[in-house]
Image 1 (cartoon, one colour):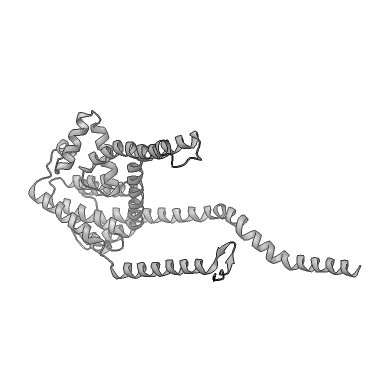
Image 2 (image 1 turned 90 degrees about the vertical axis):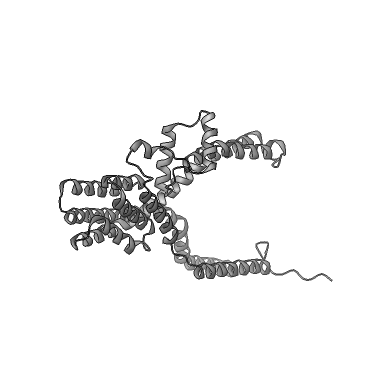
Length: 335
């Protein structure tokens, strides 16, 4: 005996779709509960890295020789083998390494050894992804309906994605990190002004601000705490500020670094200079908000035309159209 089919909507079984949606909702609730229960402190991992940096500075690993600092230090067997392989292939250049190291610093990776791994990934991933897609579309013919043009586009796209993938990933991380630091910078400068007026030293002020803003802005707190550590241990305080500007791809941070260096060099009042910078950054943030608000009408034009106006026309003209239709139908029946 065949069971009767359930109700359908647009050819879809309503009971089956409801069951699937209920299962998805239950899974989402379970994930939300798990995420709420297992909340982790965002500063725990960063504190470990900062403590490792502090121990390096204590041990004198960081030298005053700029060329020595910029060189690629071998620390692991993996990076050493990768670097030797790239060196034999004649594809490892100092400018390329420095460029990748700069992108890694912007993305929050401070281990410069990762630069050779990124370069190796740019060599291996195009071959791997291109080879897999080439085998899938040409050798095994997984998509027999595709023509030669579609096959070539898939192969070329996979190869290009393998080559540009690491850079795109680093760029996205750097963009998110820079935006997070930009949001918290005015508040950090206000706290720096308060700390400077209270008589704290520069490194103590950076340390205090990092502790206060570490949970709200973990990226900014991470950078300020690392700057405080370097100010305490490096022989040249200017180098600590230069390292901050090197790690953050933000003109506002470079302005703060310039102000700090000038106050250290000429002895100008730090609180007044930081107060001016804080006011400028707040005005800049307000201008960005006003710019987004000014762009809103142009952005809302297409959704307004596609979604809001048709509904509005139906609501306004629908009753009148029904009355006209009833009037004509009644007249036709009467005639």
